[in-house]
Length: 173
Ligand code: THU
Picture 1: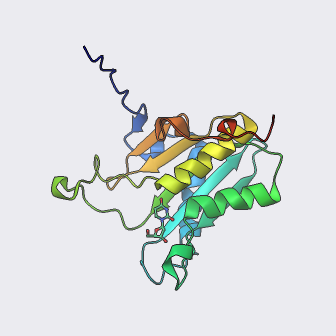
Picture 2 (picture 1 turned 30 degrees about the horizontal axis):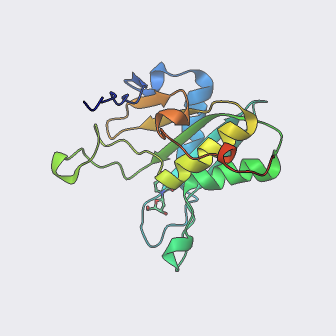
């Protein structure tokens, strides 16, 4: 008989609004919305902002940067993470916030998830995972939906199960 293992559901905490977050987290959202205005998104017109809190209290942000050669475009989350990696290479990232102003209403037919939450793409999840592994330190991820509710994930592992990581490679042997 084939044994089926139950697939674990993502774990997150849902907050009704920004008011329920810690002050520093509210500040990260404020800055993310502000920096979203620096998005260069003439092709998609989809503006995204992302903010990171580093372990020493430094705040780093990013916005999506597109290119006429579409595939070269870069998501806000990766712009922020690479900014942190380039400027603060020894400081772990503790929190990540991502926002847009283009929240859509949830629509079952279009296969949107609960209340249309803006969530990082697969490539960004992999890059977030790299920063967790690099510093052996979880990154809390804060997402927002079309109604302004917040979804807090303790680690990107909740968003990227069975992830690929550097431990599969041989370079340390
Ligand atoms: N985008 C982000 O910056 N972050 C996300 O989480 C989702 C998508 C950007 C990439 C592209 O510039 C535009 O949004 C449309 O996909």
